[in-house]
Image 1 (cartoon, rainbow, N blue to C red):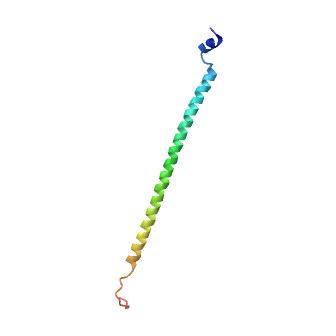
Image 2: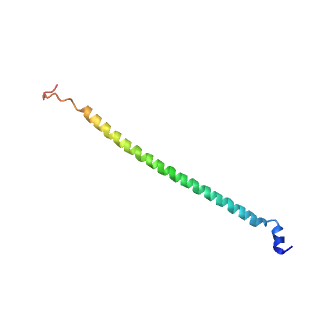
Image 3: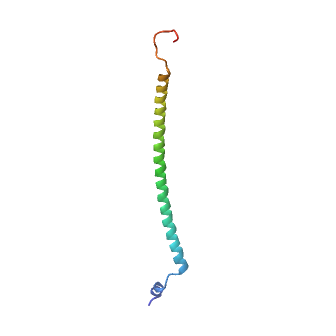
Length: 84
């Protein structure tokens, strides 16, 4: 048996194995965090779009209300200048 064959039969050196396992877990955690961050960014963009649409709708409603209330507050014109 050659030296390299003998070394390959030995169990992994525990500290190196532990470090490799922790490194793999950290890499998986980093990938999961990146996915969560991308998903959060998508949600933020969607929320900003919805907010913009709501603001535009609110502005239109405010204009319609202003037109409605300004026209309903005017007294109907009778063509008569005498007070009633």
